[in-house]
Image (cartoon, rainbow, N blue to C red; front, side, top):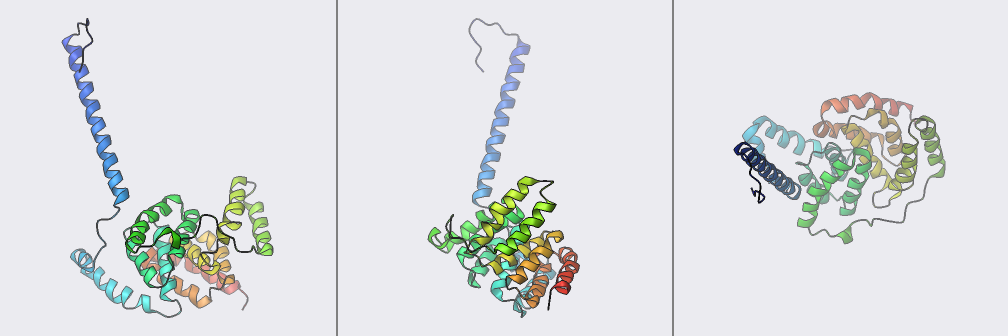
Length: 278
């Protein structure tokens, strides 16, 4: 502490000033350490992938279910390919911000035939359906996998791409419904829904419409957003998802999003199945 020349400060004033200076120094150090830790967490979001030995050391029963039920049964079931199971699982993990499991499942998705461009586009798509923060968390961990596997930007979709053709009749029906139901409450939502989602995002070619719908339905179920399921499940089936495949999505998701979310979705999916023309 520096005392200006010519000033005669009392001992009480000197002590108070010294305490204030010490407090400020401690506060600065705490902020600096917090910033350092935050930076390290962003750069290194996980120290290691969870192994079966890690699981066994905490819960032998969970390790048994992991090896016998998930690896030994679920991922081998028919009616949904390993590639589709990877898409469903990644969508659920990103929607729920479950970053610990994302590295393993990004690698598995790549091994199962999901292209880097498709994973890139899944993350982009889910920024709109699960929120930017969840997508940003997925970016951090996926970046590490892409780097390890030497996946460069040349393998990823461009920021601006030639869009797929728009289904004018279907879009007119959707736009009318949204304008009537949402317009009186939130015209801004109507604007961005049309301009960004259905005139741009849904027309990006790096993810096929059927797969984009599969991602959306999986994320909605994983997030417990049952009100949006009918529109998007119908859209997914219009885009080529079969009833058997949709049924198997429900079998995959309890293990990655929990039974309650799936059981809440079952009546809604059942209603869609029953109302669709044979």
